[in-house]
Amino acid sequence: MMRPWILPMLFVLCGSVIASALVLKGSPGSAVVLLLVFALLAGLNSPLVFPRSIGAAEAQRLSAADGRPVVYWRPGCPYCLRLRMRLGRRARRLHWVDIWSDPAGAAAVRAVNEGNETVPTVVVDGRPHVNPEPAWVREQLSRSA
Image (cartoon, rainbow, N blue to C red):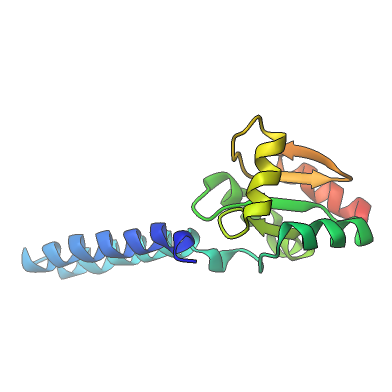
């Protein structure tokens, strides 16, 4: 459970250390700005930015029932973050599977990516698509609605 939080915690820790050094050198304004930047990076890379993740089996079952795509992702992935941000509120309509929290999800991604855990992998109608364009994913969402 700690693994998804490692990168955000590192951002906060590094930002705090650097900000402390800036305060000691007499630059509290720069320290505050830098700390805010690192806090923003931590927030963007935390699991809190993404909709609630579910297990791979449940996502596949729900997708078969409602036709919505399944997105396999992991915290800290810039491509996953790009997809999430570009989808906006529509992202909540997808079924999200965190491959670091769900071994079955990681195995499903490895099975379609030649043994690699390449994310985001979006599965639409049983067909995987690795790192698709957000516009394409939006189009698939409109078809399933």
